[in-house]
Length: 144
Image 1 (cartoon, rainbow, N blue to C red):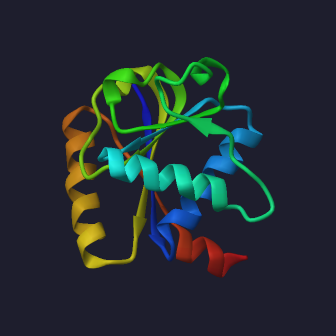
Image 2 (image 1 turned 30 degrees about the vertical axis):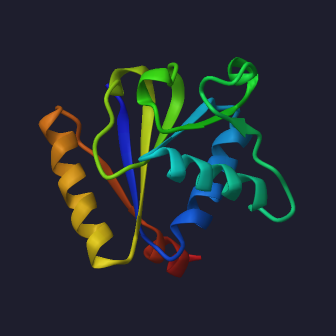
């Protein structure tokens, strides 16, 4: 069963995604980023081209010919996502196929709407028999 981690109190969800994907890549993990829609996947594709400003996070869609060799897949079609080490969930729901991931990462910004949706997902993971872990990024930053 997947280990689910919620990173919350994030100032910039997009920046946190790029940082966490970069860390996962440094650990040589294979990564999927599941978007809620085709337009959201396109926005994430653009984001991974632009951030970090001093680097590039190699990625492609799940059905791209180079997908098997690419460390990061970005797509909105969960059914096309192959088994990977980590899944970054960029949707408002709990993705299907949790058993094919060692880790699922949720990134939650500070808005009330995002927090409420995250609480709903937290309970949904619990209903799947998973006990999520929460990491408060504001608290972590204060400790440094």
